[in-house]
Image (cartoon, rainbow, N blue to C red; front, side, top):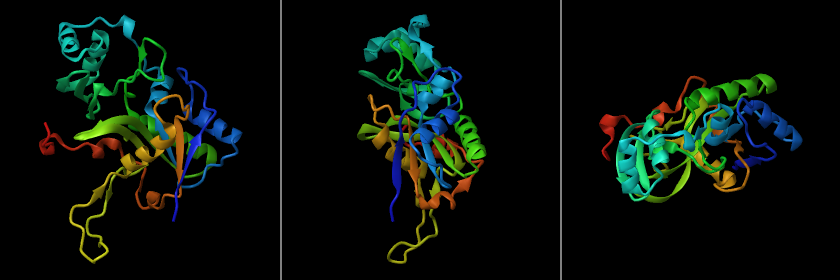
Length: 253
């Protein structure tokens, strides 16, 4: 049993109003890569934000008093802090060089997911307004063009509670459930699983980040191929929201 992880190169620097699906298919043609049924396309959220015009000129931001206070505590640029506040439902934790918040989407992450890398100096890219919708638009375009059934995952690089380092995380999905509930299945010793739920979308996003990297790799789109559970978990109406733990069960806040 094996899976393949294929980085799509030759995707140009993304500009506002670019058609991500078209750019992916053109790059695949250039590399002689054909779309196959069950392919999982993992796309970095930064390129989607750029295509949707979701960039912020930090020089245009006027910091609020709250932003100035948090900037003093964190050592961050007050203008960036103001953007973090605007992109957050709630500020949860503040320390030297970090702000943990709940984004407008409900994700808990550092700096509201604001990204200053792989974008022009002085600019920042927030998380796309609706990553699930973005994923759906791209999936439907690729499926219509190729007559293949695929999955699209929008990924972001995020840290995890109590662990160092960041990994790829799914913030948008289209074409399959992001969770695999294996309750009722048997383990190797015949015991029935009681509560096992696997965040497969996060696993796939993390696998893709091995090729995507975080610096100048220039591979914002990765195909993961031959994953057997795409048919089992096929769901064109699923969203990433099921990955978010309800606040009443959040024991860490």
